[in-house]
Image 1: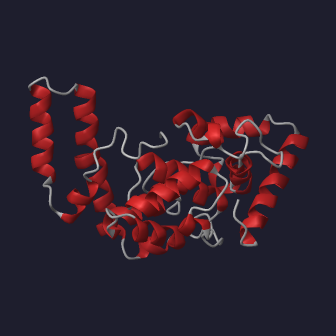
Image 2: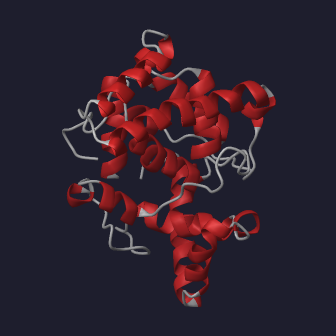
Amino acid sequence: MAEGEPYLFHARISAALNIGLLDVRRLCDDVDKAWREGRVPLNAAEGFIRQLIGWREYVRGIYWQRMPAYAGLNHLNNDRALPEFYWTGHTRMRCMAQAIGQTLRLGYAHHIQRLMVTGNFALLAGIVPTAICEWYLAVYMDAFEWVELPNTLGMVMHADGGYLGSKPYCASGRYIQRMSDHCKACSYRVDQVTEEEACPFNALYWHFLIRHRPQLSANPRLALVYRSLDGMPAGRRDAVWQRGQSLLARLDAGQAL
């Protein structure tokens, strides 16, 4: 993710695919041909084709197999309303302001922005799955329910309990720092956790893991994370929890972070 580069490294063909203007089989054949002719590297061709005939069709299958009951799943029992800043982009969190602002301007954001910025925040904050699903469906020009709903409810929100993906895609601000240049201009400090100016993603990440330990601690893909949590001094864990509680209380009061 790079500021001023909304389309960097992304093909922008999802809307044309989802509306039927591009044929998936023809597109995959064209990419395969380009690789065989030496015009693209194998890793690029494989990744591109796998997303289309692998993940995309997997998501389509889940939608048609599990609907309509799938749309109402809420495995983590989330009950928090979608914050108002999802509709305005008015937040001090630089990554969120950039992703939401771009979304509202262009009707587009790429996969990492959706999953690991706006989606990650909704997961950590405990937003009602139907609320964030409806937001994604409303704001993105490539969002059709069969592809949007399973990705959001299952992959982003883990609301299906791991049916679509084996772990929740939760992350702290450190991940966003590694994947972007947003943190340099942010009002918050990504290197802090419990302080008033600490990046909200940091405390909310640990708060999420603590409050959902009964549902998540047995997941082998989260074993290392929970070992880190258990190795944290008790006073530090208490401070992290209190910081998370404070941030969530602000959201409940309708305050932008």
